[in-house]
Image (cartoon, rainbow, N blue to C red; front, side):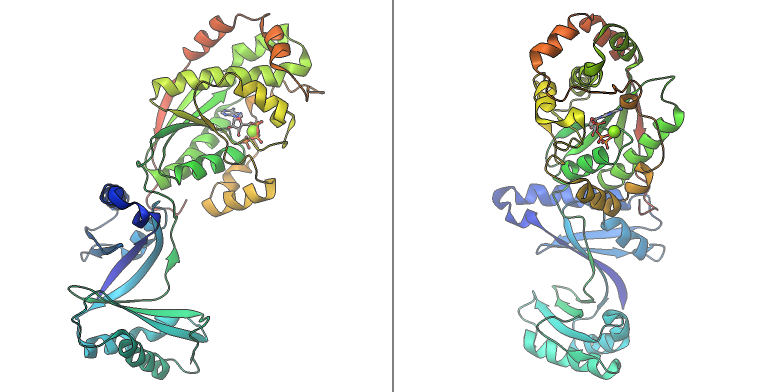
Length: 396
Ligand code: ATP
Ligand code: MG
């Protein structure tokens, strides 16, 4: 008897001819996620399942925690392996029954028989193993319709696995199957959620933070790095770029109409983000904008910033309410970090009465008072980056 981790993959199974490429990417992500854990791991895939064995130094429970953050996996089960004969299987089910049902009052048995030569058919396996559970766990009942617990017996090529219902995986597509995008990452709640939503579809993430020293400090920057670390714990390393917009903001404050400050800054962000994306080999941008949430996110305002876009700008939070965004932030582990107090460059020169219905022409007229090219070039000279790694030991 030995611990084993059984992972099921999701959408990849639908990928037809591309499937083996997706499977290889997923195996690579699984391997990378386990690389820095104690012990060594044997990782194999067959029949839409990845099975992980560990040596005597392996920490299988920690490994299972890590697996919950690998995109492409829909369920993570820690179970047990035994020899493929009915007596061993029944003995193991009996021994582990209480743990497998984890306090549930009802259960059902499911048998998966990928070895069709196994002398018992699925209903027989279920009946025999179900009887073991019933005798080992006092008061538990069978409920095939909506059981609280499920005890699964998998008869595979070389061994049998027994596991409970397991935990939900991160879903989505394996990281690296869908290009690279640049996330405009502030210290707020929305942008990390936006980054996670796009990352989930297999996209590598690089991030860009606009700072405004001395108005924004080191603490704000560290906060953004902590958010990047949470994203990296799902996708692997994230390169976090920083660009200073201090000079741009001072010039806007000095020369432009106050009501337009934020929008002019946001258009500069768009120019700078695209230039950074080109250098970072990203082919799309991601922002945390949500329609109507603040003055710079009205339809008219988004039209004005988008008018400068020369690459796709993904705004996955666009249709979400704040409450829905917060729910995701809590689930992925960014909410507490985002809730720390901080100053953002957008709040440095906030107009008291921002213009809600700007037009591109009005903004261009204001921007004509500025040396757009010089300001953009000098801001790009402040570009720096750090590499942020996900922490394999933590859940966040
Ligand atoms: P968030 O919660 O993500 O900060 P927000 O509701 O505060 O969003 P805005 O301040 O209008 O909204 O910003 C909209 C989007 O612009 C952000 O989601 C983010 O993608 C980008 N952005 C804003 N400020 C910055 C910044 N300092 N650095 C990088 N990106 C930024
Ligand atoms: Mg913000």
